[in-house]
Structures are given as C-alpha cells and as structure tokens.
Length: 228
Image (cartoon, rainbow, N blue to C red; front, side):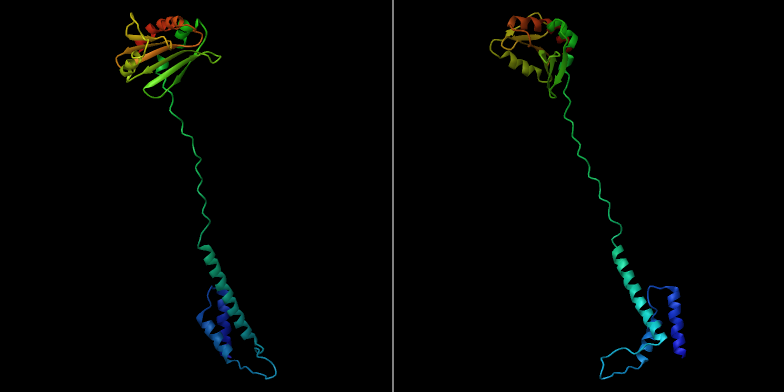
C-alpha cells in the first residue's frame, strides 16, 4: 500500500511540474509495479493484459505521455535547427556603361556664327563633335541635316599628318597664311600646320565647284589658325 502511495505522489508531482523527460524514479517504480502484477493465461484464449487497477492505469498514462512529449520535442528540435529561411540576396541590375564622350576640340576652332558668316551666308548651323582620340572632327549642319562644313584637328601627331597630306597628288601650297598650308582640290580641303597640331577645313554642301570650296576655306583659315 505504501508503494502505491509513493508511486502516485511521484507521478502526480511529475505531471504538475511538466518536465520534458520522465523522472528515473517514477519510471523504475512504474516498471516494478507492472512486473509485480500476476498474469494468467487461459489456454482457450490468446494472451491479453489483465484488467488494470487505477494506479496501474495512471502509471501507463504517465509513461505514454512522457513518450509523446519527448518525441514531440525531438521533432521540434530537429525541425528548428535550420533557423528561418535565408532571404535571397537581391540580384543587381546590370547598368549600361556609357561610351566615351566625343571630344569637341575640333568644334572650338570655329564657332557656329563664324561658319554662318564665312560659309553659309547666314543660314543657321549647329556644330556636332566626333572622335575621342588624337584626331577629332566637327560637323556644322543645318536644320535639314545638310553638312555645310567639316573641321578636323590632329594633336599630337599633327606634323606627321600634315606630311601625309602634302604628299597627295595635286595638292597646292598656300601662301599668305600665318601657318604652313596646302589645299587639296580633289576634296576641297585646306590643311594647316602649327607646331605639332594640324587642322583641316573642308567645304561640303552647296559648294559645287573647286573655286567655291577654295574661297570658303581661305575665308575661314585666318580665324582658325590662331586657335591651334
């Protein structure tokens, strides 16, 4: 009788505290109590457990509850080891790399107003830069997209470029300018050299004859040469 009360107090204390593991003393007492219950076998029926008294049922319930609690905690612990799902890193959006900006060095040789006076007779033009290396270009075009004039600047390397220009067949040496100069009638282009900088002026739209081209470039050369 004392064993029953001791077992009952241990089981009740364990249930009130709510542990996650069955106390060893309670388990040993429950096993000892269960083993002490006599079992009878009737040859006419299969084995079965005898009817349990209230204390035995309490012990069995405690043991079953302990197994459920331990298994449940183990499942939760295994499922929680991974932590919260990792937030994927944002994929950077590719950014287009801008290309090099055209150098406007050739456009600084003549202004749009100077080209209008010396070449177009007052028709408005806008300069457009081209080139990023030692040789740059400037195109003076009107609102209709017609290019009236082109200037080019080679610096450094102007001396070599001027030597190549003067070696062309049919070029004419120009006198009276403040720099070495030659005119190429095949393209309507004037080449001038100052130190290692060479500039060219080429008449394009609306100039149908070599004489017209020659006159235009000679009008603009004195304005351009001091800016080399």
